[in-house]
Length: 361
Ligand SMILES: *[C@@H]1O[C@H](CO)[C@@H](O)[C@H](O)[C@H]1NC(C)=O
Ligand SMILES: *[C@@H]1O[C@H](CO)[C@@H](O)[C@H](O)[C@H]1NC(C)=O
Ligand SMILES: CC(=O)N[C@H]1CO[C@H](CO)[C@@H](O)[C@@H]1O
Image 1 (tube, helix red, strand yellow):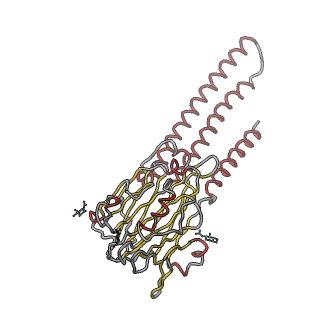
Image 2 (cartoon, rainbow, N blue to C red):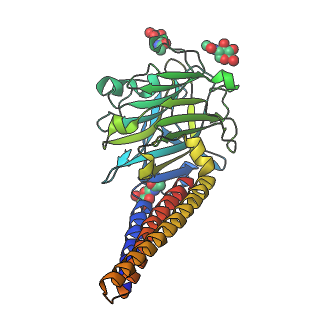
Image 3 (cartoon, rainbow, N blue to C red):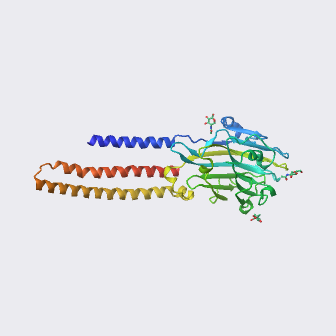
């Protein structure tokens, strides 16, 4: 009996270890580039299109997306397609990307971080609309971009010459933010830092912009609710940074770019959470859960012991009435429910805590 219980325990434990092992195994690619041409992985992971080329100056290198001429356009794309719904059973996937860039003071189109579906013609340009419009004419369904726009284009109803917009299936932004309101000029020629985070659990996209690389702002510049798992399902998509000078001679440079995918723990699927509170309160939340679970275990133990005692009492009572002499049976009954209840809850505790830790990472 005892050895059977231990065996069952070991099997359960092994199952959970394997389960979390598969969660942490990396079907979720990520990359990070700084000083582009010195990175040996650069060429095997990134494709350059249009006028984009690696440039060097002093000890550093970067990707120059546009030439100092009108109708110049270029982009860099991560070669590997990504999925925002992954695996079987399917998991939602969050992503975070960071890049630093600068744009010269002319009013070109600016820069866009784009996610495009397979079949989007990535190598076709017309020198305007971040170099994205020919592709959009062919395939706008499944197109997504965050634009850093320095040209007030009446055609797209632009707000001003210094705005960030979220574009879904069209370059007419679904949401815009006046960048002047946070005292930043996109085309000042200075290096800017951008963080774009999509939280699949809460189906929310956040964009942050800063003048200093070590100062990721607490408050997003722009928040946009969107469900990428609905938009693309299990379809593969490509991510890239794209720019065009339009009628100006604006140049745009990208100095570093990183991109990371993170699977969302199963339990977050059904209950959208505020990503900020998840990020900050992971530890207290799991501690809280742990103590709540300990209480539940204690209650179950007391309840189990009570039941066992009652059972034993009834059996003994029956024995004394019917003269059956087998007092060993009640002892078994007394132990078993307790052990079973305890184990069942223990497993739940482990899972909850592990999930909690996952979010914290
Ligand atoms: C953008 O913000 C700046 C600074 O707050 C303001 O002066 C300007 O009028 C705003 N532009 C629009 C179009 O709201
Ligand atoms: C660029 O210039 C051409 C000719 O000067 C003009 O037709 C076109 O509308 C301009 N494009 C933009 C985006 O201003
Ligand atoms: C960050 C990244 O994706 N690195 C990959 C670049 O390409 C090489 C070779 O294909 C891979 O080994 C790296 O993992």
